[in-house]
Image (cartoon, rainbow, N blue to C red):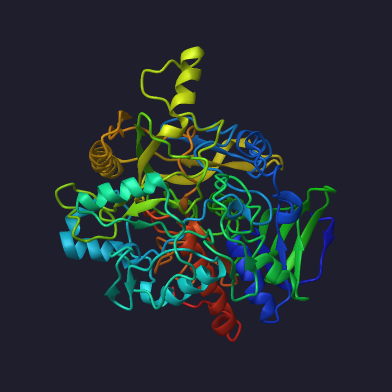
Length: 592
């Protein structure tokens, strides 16, 4: 029983990262009384991300100051449902952020437009390759949205986030220097690409010579001073080398704490409450609508009920799913019967990389940013890449450049170098500035036995069951990664390095230990039927019409692109839908 019940508000937002900040700004400006609850603290560039303290690798990378505290709440993990899941004591493979801004504080800025190739995956693959191409246990489906309806929202997010890049398709006309395989854009990026670096230039030359189509990665790292439509000013990127896992002292990397959250705070209708941990979404007696949330003030220990006309779940992918399961909203997914929707369609990402070493060449890897990579999309958005011989669904991108090659964490040495001692020291001194890598990032398709549920044994600081992850790469991902490794190694060899450690295409089980990416997707996925999705295409819960779920947990599968561009665009679309449709006639936006 809550010790205190507050006055009802129009909307309560759980989590104040990109999606929470977007909803907070848009809804409060529309006149709604909005409260946002964030379990972490508020930071500012001026007070928290200034030189020299911001460039503290021990503090932010080794001690994970900006990340979710695994001592209070973590997850358990296993590769198959036949294994016992054990708690993740230290975050490794992925790093959810904690604090106002969430993972949008420490990301590297990659901002992509996902297209109909993802949104209509089942339809397109079946049309092209036949229904038998998709395995029975691969739960690929259409999302219920289209690129055409998402395009203006992509544009809005890119302008909010000062994205730098080069268009490859303007109104249907392919543009030199951009990605020729991207879907048509109405206009150019708000800022030109960041300055190229040597590793990216070398990769670009090799890729073009091999017949591929290199282009600069689009990223929310402003290449020049910029003012966004909300009047927020950005500085130009300083190429400081401290991007991923760090705040930005130059206000060049877009973050919610710089953009949408301050814009929301200008409205008298918006209230932000930090150190507020939501433990449950509350339902009415009919269980057809939600009535608010229960949360704990972490500073005082007080439990508080916040009633609301609408609830917006805007936390990290895994936390969204966890809170739905803890609240008993929607039927949990059962892989045996393939019934239920909460925890279904969980996906991650595949990666492989080659490390290249060049005697006498200096890359200056400490001069870089999240957007200094060069990419090829020839094996992802390009339908001329024939998936039939490989028997795969999905694709991958290949890129090269330097992104946060830190002095402690980045110690590239050739294979065979001792792991410690004087020889290792000599090798790290020799090769730190003379190496580069080429890597791939691939999609992950939903599988019957990859899912999220509540752990029966382990509990968090509030006595609630931890989220349990059951996940491993399947044959589709192994085949895709093997093809990616072949392309990566061919490009690497074409650069004639002194030596190289080749990318591995051997099948490997997923591990929670080495960092890959924070690109988790699914768990509360969108779709056109309540039988196999948690939310409709407007991100409205099938089970409670006044509950909306944001972020990558609504993805029906995971693609090769980083998710934030789509996450932001979906949030803007949902905000417009609430303002222009739902508030005029509250109820289901789609018939079940």
